[in-house]
Length: 116
Image 1: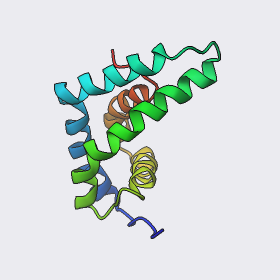
Image 2: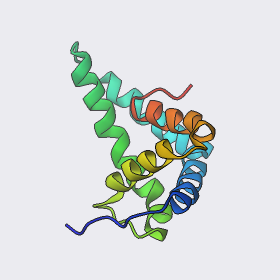
Image 3: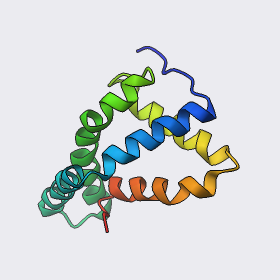
Image 4: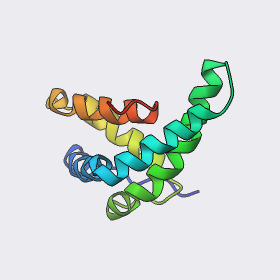
């Protein structure tokens, strides 16, 4: 697998803002919520397994949802998740982080199946 591109703080901000706008589209939120409902409908009493079910349903939806924005910055389907982590790390180290913190928290909550 090829290594993901290395972003600057500025390109990370631009990429994040585009990806977040796509994440927030009502049709995408609806698709993700439905996936969470489906994952939680699977019978299990183990909270870790239930969370795993949610991630396994939501993550495959995020990849195509954000592919166009991430591809624009040199990421592929194989490096998309590494790119998301790289963006989070760059933004966390940026003095303007408080501006991005609520948006990052919203995405992380979405990955856990919390959309409200």
